[in-house]
Length: 229
Length: 352
Image 1: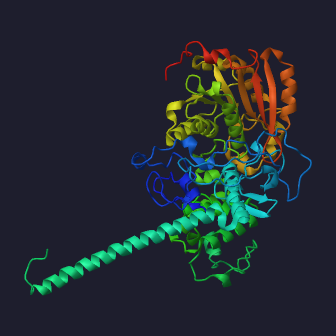
Image 2: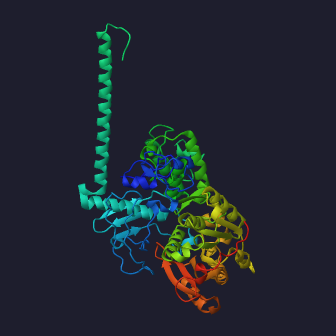
Image 3: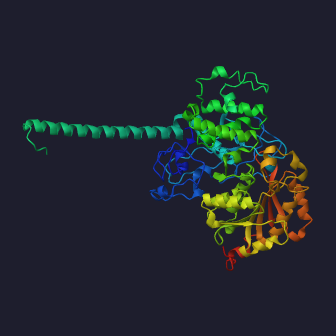
């Protein structure tokens, strides 16, 4: 599933897009992607008509990774044995990102940070304040499978890192689980629902046709007399 | 004239070596250019003129005019459609600014930080990507010490040098119970933080105060807000001798006062560390972004100032592997939660 600019009118469709539930909680628009901006573009009118309680901004799943991202040094592909980050936080594996209200959906395999390699565009010199760079593209590689994700969906390095992990997590799931992967299952489910809707619509149409025919034939039977029932 | 050259109608083999002649045969139809083509053309112009990040700049500008934040996030169909004359003109206007080395963030008038879209305006300091990790670290610490977070409506945070409001506003939006006091000595920064707080509807939990922390007794103005849980800062930390080597984007457009940290880049840092103990609760924390040379310098300096009762707890690297962030704690009562966070009346607060 490729992530594209969010199309929900309220801008809150973020979390929903990820699980394949295409309807935004807040404006019921079909969401194909997600917007970066949280809050500023939210439509208060749409929010109040939500069937579920609105998620507080801090709980929107897409950009929340409670466990810290490991400080992996930006070097070309290949294991780095030197330059260890000064502080390695415990629990480095990216946690499963649970969507509110999606308890029935099986969780994806978490990514192990030690199996990932990340590449950014580095500035030269001391970096930080001394550099103003805008190249925020993140390239993330999953070493065991060789899968690579390049993410430049947002203007924020931090968000791109998180998104890259999200996208890679899904790709890894497909890679190892094939037809059994969450993405494929969701796709089949969506397809099934679509077929179901089509079938019902067809049925309704058939019934209407039959009713019309009945009315038409009853008119001719009674010789054009007024009085359709 | 630049536009004429771009559409291939300009002089052949101009004296400045524009070398556009190689493009002309590839024009699908005169005047009908798509986003992808325009990005390439402007990237080439920027490269020719030595503009750094030629392709990125071109992509951001074109994407922006087409309503997207990045080129990659632009819907594929929009990338190949012909652009309208209005769009072409907008792009040209913005690219002209880039030719004058204006930073992309000022050209677009906005930028993103931690998922928030913020207005950008010269000369207010543009948030750097590294600083997003400063925010992450603060959030981790708050999550780790819930007694700090829950007492009296979330952590009370002071940000020194708020600039556009990036750090303050992202903390506020991620910590719904928190309150922030944001200070800056620049008037433009104060205004811009106000504006961004307004746009993000976070004004009710932020106090934005013009304040120069290097001036005598300035910390006293902050006392009425009560003891703080956290002090966060990305203070000017560039070594003075390094200032002149900064790129024209920075030197010509950003406020030097937001960058210049004095001889060893430590001037403002030292003031922040000196005022913090007077304002922080026991075991309150300071989180700083610094130059990679600072952790050692600050470590030694703190040891020479036992009167401050500050301990350097940890240093953390940024995503490029450079030591960039420091966690310093005010040593007060032994272990556990600070006493004054759990008992006693809420601190008196100044009106407004």
